[in-house]
Amino acid sequence: MRPDLFEAPDYYNLDDLFSEEHLLVRDAARQWVKRDVSPIIEEYAQKAEFPKQIIGGLAEIGAFGPYIPEEYGGAGLDQISYGLIMQEIERGDSGVRSTASVQSSLVMYPIFTYGTEEQRKKYLPKLATGEWMGSFGLTEPNHGSNPSGMETKYKDMGDHYLLNGAKLWISNSPFCDIAVVWAKNEEGRIHGLIVERGMEGFTTPETHNKWSLRASATGELIFDNVKVPKENLLPNKSGLGAPLGCLDSARFGIAWGAIGAAMDCYDTALRYAKERIQFGKPIAATQLQQKKLAEMITEITKAQLLAFRLGQLKNEGKATTAQISMAKRNNVEMAINIAREARQVLGGMGITGEYSIMRHMMNLESVITYEGTHDIHLLITGADITGMPAFQ
Image 1 (cartoon, rainbow, N blue to C red):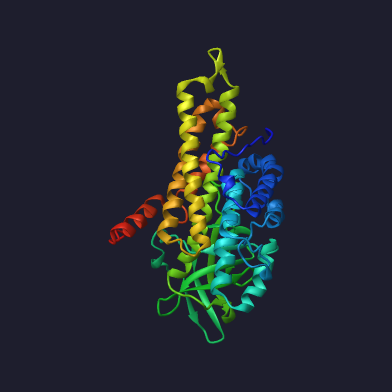
Image 2 (tube, rainbow, N blue to C red; image 1 turned 60 degrees about the vertical axis):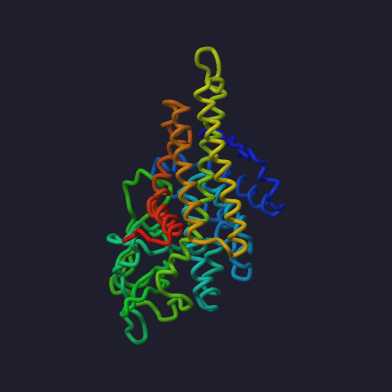
């Protein structure tokens, strides 16, 4: 494993806009990634295994529910801090960031926002420390971009609910302790239920043979007549807007996280180009390589500014779903394009596990699809500016 020599690009001096707390939070996450993620991540990606030993470290840097109030175990940070933590973790690996995103935005967020005080006190502190890990069940085998068509259902059996159905492409599912599951009641209304490991009929088979997010655990959630206590229903919001609100939070984190992956690819390509000698000079001195590198830093800078402004809007409670979709779509596309260009700068070395670029590229092929596909986010923007949805 090569030493982690990463130096973060900041071409427009964005550090001047961050608060002292922002910088402390980011730098703590950055140093943790260098110390605990970079030395092991290539090995775990090669063997397609999530490094569970890093869960405690993720909790220590505030990656689990950073914006959740301290009384429930969170760090009580703002949305820009959350974004910066996601940026630094994804600089290490998208799969590790996925684990943190799911825990924060798709498990802790709905329990805090839609749950009862009893649910908050029971689940959030243990999720914040990583003692309990969670997953989020929305996507189904037959329903991805159209979650309103979900087939997972539950019935009121008097003293409990009876849950049946299946969810697919679920991060953290193989080892989750709880799952926030979205299902339809007998009237067809979507509600969230907290399903706990050990409930009879609840299984979480792992998905194997992935070429992407190999250092992340992905699987299914299977419900075969699972008896869910009535107190496990999230009562404060129902309908499709409830899970979509969670996805807004997660997509915001992705918009920042993708910048981290792009930064790592750019930094690797820049360092390599300065060291690689061809025709008697570093390839960084050639016009074609300078074009690649100059375009990379330009696109990263634009994405940084987009994410920062979105963070301000999120802090003010003004960020719209469409604005978040735009940032997610733009920044992930930016990152995957930079990964591809950076791989070319490294030539054949770019495909080896000695460097991070090919791993980032493969990971981003998932990130560009999950939590709203690239095309769906385009249509969200289109619907927002025209007032005419094109989904149907």
